[in-house]
Image 1 (tube, protein in one colour):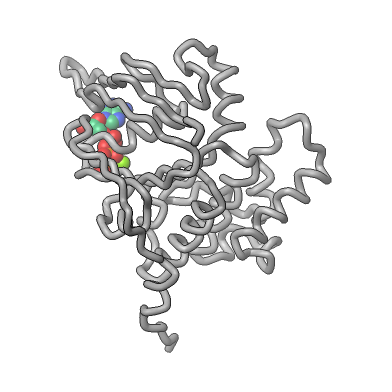
Image 2 (cartoon, rainbow, N blue to C red):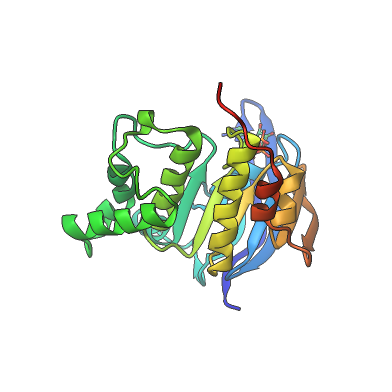
Length: 247
Ligand SMILES: Nc1ncnc2c1ncn2[C@@H]1O[C@H](COP(=O)(O)OP(=O)(O)OP(=O)(O)O)[C@@H](O)[C@H]1O
Ligand SMILES: [Mg+2]
């Protein structure tokens, strides 16, 4: 399989007053196309810093990062922004959708920076992406008119709309109840089955059972990196959960 991400001895220091915080202390790994990687570790271990690095939202203090074969360090700011827009889809814990804006409009956003799509093409792609996450019947709903699970689906549709090389998720199920979390996991597993590359940061050790690989961070270092040869089915787990009755 093709190599999508290669990190070589990535370090990230933050200067806070007199003190230097070593958030990443030399992280190296390679991720190939089609992997579903969970990244775990206690609070402060460097997960978000690592994800921000992978998403070109943050620049390492030292080390090399190759995204789809391109050295991110050597790129200019604009070039990097374009690379981020084309190659990476982000999903956050708090959805990060525009309020009072429809699902279609939210999903269209990443395409605004892509001159190869006009307004009609943007809309068509956004609708296609929303249908793919099971929201074909919520196209015109605004963010504040949707449930948490639906908002997260919109965010996933937005992450997918550019057909990115990799999807980065930071605690994407962190705000959701158990049942909705499994529904979102089912969706991620389907994307994985379709060949998508996913990197999913989580506190929840259960989620590692549904991914193909788990990287464990501690104090800015990788302490284990294991492949899962017994991937569990989130759909099966979902089917076992009791159905909640509204009252
Ligand atoms: N912008 C920043 N300035 C200074 N220190 C920072 C900054 N961002 C992160 N850190 C520090 O770097 C370390 C790693 O932070 P990071 O946010 O990556 O942890 P995390 O594993 O995502 O934690 P959590 O599980 O709580 O989200 C922490 O000690 C944090 O205080
Ligand atoms: Mg974090």
